[in-house]
Image 1: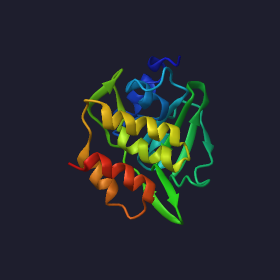
Image 2 (image 1 turned 120 degrees about the vertical axis):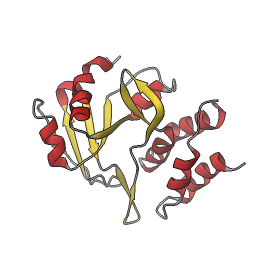
Image 3 (image 1 turned 90 degrees about the vertical axis):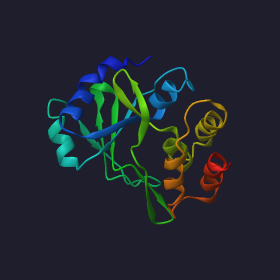
Length: 177
């Protein structure tokens, strides 16, 4: 099991530099109780790459490919020593158009003091990555849990013309009354 305390100093550096972030991927699934362990740390950030690099000057990092389809994020960096994958400007390519996904942490939820991405955003992301089993896991969670479903976030996601039909159908089930 990955120890969240190992990345807290990195997260503190982001907060000190006013860099918006959220934990996604398997960490988000773990926090929601949908998986038993965290594979690696996916940290989405919203800032120019130069500002991020300046904030993490104490860490060794390498730049990774970020534009390999279906991904269309602005940049992707890896901090190997912490097993952290940083994604700046989280986005996907949908038939040549860019689908940007918001950071949108879960309101009023902190895990070890860190922001956690909304499952609604990762429902879309996992679909775009071709990982329907994880998207389905999130959808089932959103449809059956008694926790807060962010209808405003879903409506803003649905406002994008770049969603696929399948994603749109799934999200619509969460806002129908």
